Length: 361
Image (cartoon, one colour):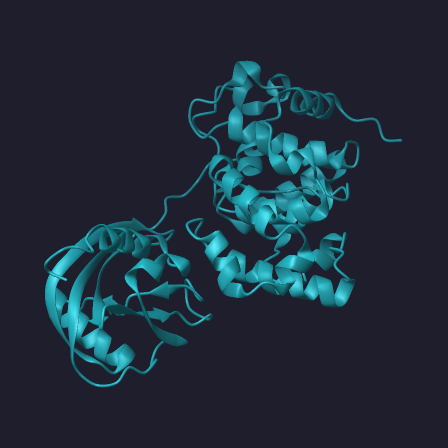
């Protein structure tokens, strides 16, 4: 048996004593770990926990997820963002049932053949659910170990991830792989934070380069992101016989499979009303007249921001056809909440439902 070095033992002991309670930790079966790791990508633990609990209540097994309609899966995911994760989960569940009889594969390389499972998620699942000694390298791990080992290269560079994967590999083989990986991630999330890390409580402080050399403000080295662009979007709330027209985005698009109000980006040379009229005609074949503005919503995505303006519209001519979407549907306002919508559109729906008695409607 390989004897672990002191910092590995300290890390494991610290994790077992100080780990936060999470529903997937109390029952780390492969399905639970898989769902949690997909949800935790780009999303904080406190946000994920209620979604995880609802998702497992609705889809308690991989078989139930594989049988589900994608619209039900997206509705259950609604508001969590990064919807490709939900679509990939649904696709992967079908593969797991058809190819492996509902048993998630245990090996690191085989896990990466499933939709949505890259090196990070595969390493987390294989180590936590199956105790295979594969190190996880996420943002927390990058921060902890560039400080610990004094690595001054830009952590946005792929080679830094590769370096840490190689350097951590022999150490995880001396430990409980689940405690090792979760311990590092927990340390980064709770103590070794980007600013003002709590070094006095850190189990690795005795051997940490940044702590000993007073470099915690310098490490990790991280280049600046490009400026985040801002887009102005205008959409139409199109009425006919008390119903509203909505469109289902193509699965190949961002937010694929979700529903939205027809519309799009404003061109520099046009007004918001002209944007609505042009976009609605292009997307649905309907010529509309823009009436009053209903509301404006600001929302931030990973790589851009939007201001979304929604206008009530009436139809002048034409017959609706899904030119740019998978489906168009007329729906009563009170039934809008039965469909999965992006967060920005949900804010519009809330406004619609609160103003159903408005004389403008």
